[in-house]
Image (tube, rainbow, N blue to C red; front, side):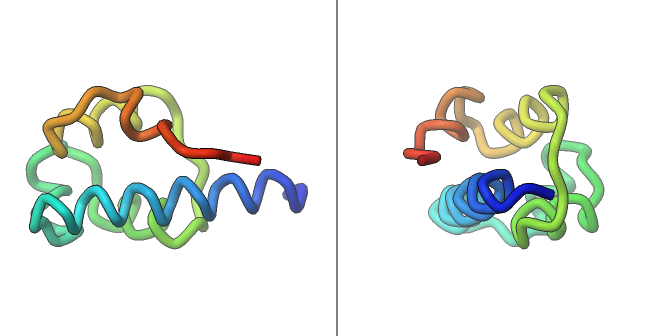
Length: 76
């Protein structure tokens, strides 16, 4: 993986974790709300997995936010 891509995934990971924690949800609780496997959420939040658009949408629904809110960060 390119270093630039790794930095972007790390920023997204931190942002997702921050949004989840602000909602008072554990990774398992979010998993139950959005039908994304707990292990997948853990990997995403640890910058270990890239995600597809459908997963991004599912996570946004679980958090009760618009998908654009998940990407509202400075990637570069």
